[in-house]
Figure 1 (spheres, helix red, strand yellow):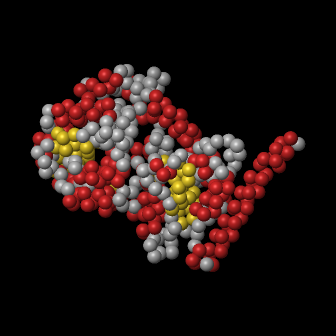
Figure 2 (tube, rainbow, N blue to C red; figure 1 turned 90 degrees about the vertical axis):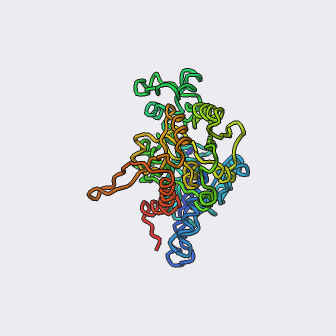
Figure 3 (cartoon, rainbow, N blue to C red; figure 1 turned 90 degrees about the horizontal axis):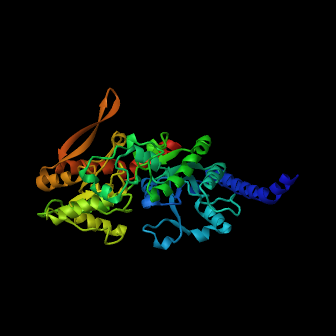
Length: 451
């Protein structure tokens, strides 16, 4: 009897509220079958808008469906502590404080969701969480959101960007250059570019120590990984933005990041590389510790001190706004990225700008499509920079070529001189990262068609 009272007092109102939302959505969906101007066809992506990708994917949908009834009215959503201070803007911007008001969440749902066919939830961050009661917002409430969207007749997917699902401990064991590993001393870590790599395979998970920042990521990503079985049970598809995340979610679909190609095409056309006497090297870490600044910056400062390269320490000069990136890339020849083992958005923008990129891609990731680059480790970083500074246009860059062997696609690796590699890089980003490929992925997964 006590449980029944609790259900009537606390749970039943939530269920009645959801049933009203579901009924209204179903009715609108039926109406849209007869009224073409009210087709329920848009896509909502949020609430993280990480690296502006939600906005970029939504824009790609809208561009490809311009003048076509199959897809339209796609929007991005960003919920943050202070949206006005974000690097990027979204179509719907809600502060964390505003989201605490249930009426505001209802209004957001009515405005942003009813006109959409697809809802893509980023990083398992809840948007509405109508069942949370007085609890704080938690990843498990995103499951409630997904179920509600399904019952409203929406197609639902979940997007993972990286740290939201990556297992730092497994990464540290797998990758000897992982930024998540707590090296015994900072001096030893700084000297690792001159000494053999730490063989992480010889260390057990019990004895391996993660740095403090990584331990926090471990806790949050572990929660998300624990929710994967529930999502699978609901037949909700997963999407990942970088192929390395297949190690975390093997049944995911690769949803490539989208970059503003036209903006960076201008850089490539108007600011050719290797025109100054000194090699201009660029390194801008979004998070210094994760991008291994303690391994990279000392090498760059050493070479700059020798007069071999030109290098400005952006780590010391504070954060860089995204609108500055094209101008900064225009003043560089060579871009150093990271040792995590993936190609991020900034590295892709550098490729689109016609720059040479150095980064570390591990063996697992190397079997997936990767743009032309010079593969580096902490041990080879200095030597590779010296090689490019000496050979310049005659430098060789590793390139992947997709070949068909008896109908099976296979990646082959070879090296090309700078000019040819840059041209191949431009072709690569146009094929995978202009938005068309990403929309095609979503079309296939959700059974959509753009005529």
